[in-house]
Length: 80
Image (cartoon, rainbow, N blue to C red; front, top):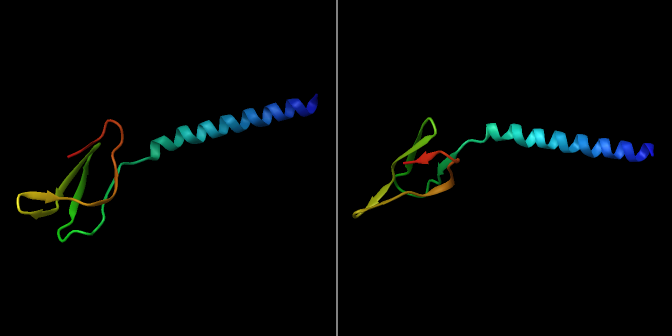
C-alpha cells in the first residue's frame, strides 16, 4: 500500500510542478516579427506597447513588399 501512496504523490507533484512551469512561462513569451533580409530595402519593426509598427519595405511599382523570417503577434496585440 505504501508504494501506491508514493506513486500517487509523485504524479501529483509532477503534475503540479509542470502546470506551474507552463503557467509561469506564459509571462515570458513575446511577439516576434523579424525581417528575413531578402529584400533590397528591409522592413523595420518597432514596438509600442503591444503594437508592432512595420515600416520600410521594398516598393515595386505601386506594390509594397515585406518579407519576414518570423511573424508572431500575441493575442490582444497588433501589427500595423
